[in-house]
Length: 208
Image (cartoon, rainbow, N blue to C red; front, side, top):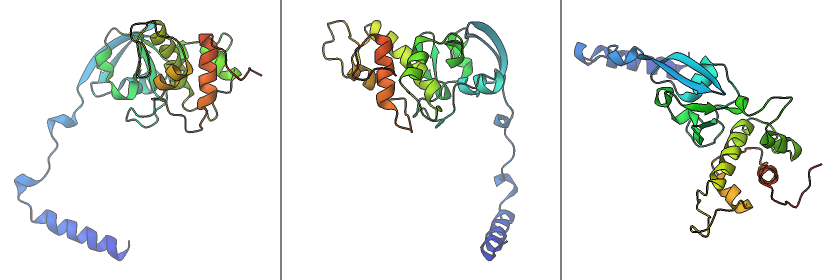
């Protein structure tokens, strides 16, 4: 131990010894987990779990169901790596509790396609090199699928010019709606090209 560590330890011990008994921290009732039974349909299969009520949907999928495709990136809802589709809408699974989704229909990257039968969005990401390290890719693909569904459902975004007309799939719409999914490798242009292909848009670059 360094001299600084010794001094810090002695100071802390002296301060603790002067506290009255009532001021010292004792374990409270919140230290014991409250368990609840949760069921939902995930990737077409109904699953039931007994979880600590503080368990996030992301941790329920990764730690309890071993569906590790959805990634824990920032764990603050800022990067989109944990994106799942819940009842048709994309959400940051790290920011929501599993108990809030009783009876929900949930799709993770594992439920979109199989290695021998890729989802069109997955196949387009491969063709256009829409990934590099791949860590954010599951969230990017889930978000991409939901984004195109949002546009087809005529849900406007910040860049929608005419709120009275049907929403069109454009590169501007794709970029705006995907802005919550961060790619630290910087594959954004390839991601837009992949999504544009799935949406039927013409892009400047052709798949190899």
